[in-house]
Image (cartoon, rainbow, N blue to C red):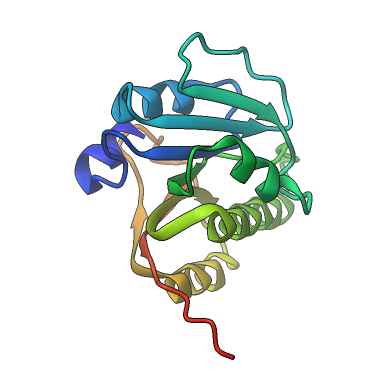
Amino acid sequence: LFQAVKKYRFIRKGDVVVDLGAAPGGWIQAARKIVGSKGFVLGVDVKYIEPFSERNVKTIIADITEEDTSQQILKLIPRKADVVISDAAPNISGIWEVDHARQIDLAQQALKTALETLKPRGNFFVKVFQGDMLSDFIARVKKHFETVKIIKPEASRARSSEMFVLGMHLKLRINKQ
């Protein structure tokens, strides 16, 4: 996360960050360092996350595949999020097609949550696995964000199919009557 933020500057001091799939809490700690004492970080996961002592870090047990999770998030953050990050990963079965499909489904859920909780021009950073469903997912992200980058951080193992999609500057939605 630090490498990607350093290069693309999609999280800044004072930002409100929502971290989906946050357990055990490494990205929460990283985001907290970046946003500083004036920012806010909310960690969301189906698993329990040890509480943080900082007042500007909260965690909840919630499932991003559930309908009301975005509403729970919006009630807990001080304003619409500047950034939604997701390192959510499925339980790996070892069957590539299944794992890829599950990962893309989690990424789609993270995108849906981001679209509901991000402020206009907000940013979205999500883990994906390479595979045949990835290009359709990237196309969906491109519909909603002005700039989309595919990132393979140096920290990720070369043989790993893990990569990240960064959507920057959520497009303004004009409600058509």
